[in-house]
Length: 125
Image 1 (cartoon, rainbow, N blue to C red):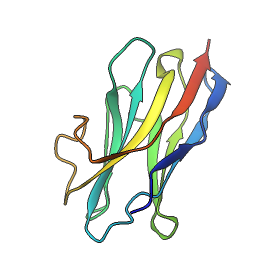
Image 2: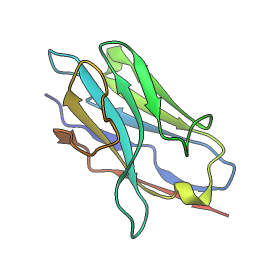
Image 3: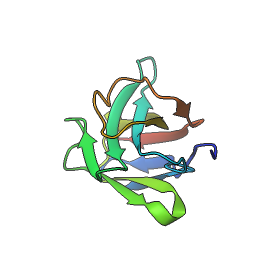
Image 4: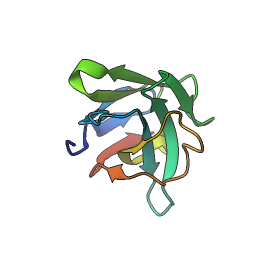
């Protein structure tokens, strides 16, 4: 399988937008759950959103609902995280992760087989 590689992070002002990419996702022979996590400075890693490739369903943390959207481009083996109306509390290192699964049960728990190196998102007020 390809390595997971995140990109698209950067520095924006509050209210701005960014689109993160997770390349190399969903390239295995079975279905998988692909998730986005973030780790704010000095805090634990937390789940942001997840996508189940087998059923095409998405899950979101309450803190990002209606602001973040997961977009899957299967042909490119890439999962995007469109982030709008960004807030300073969205600041952190963002990671994508993947595990073999038919659905994304307990997706917020960081028990995934593959992880990317992360991309930094900084939102200033």
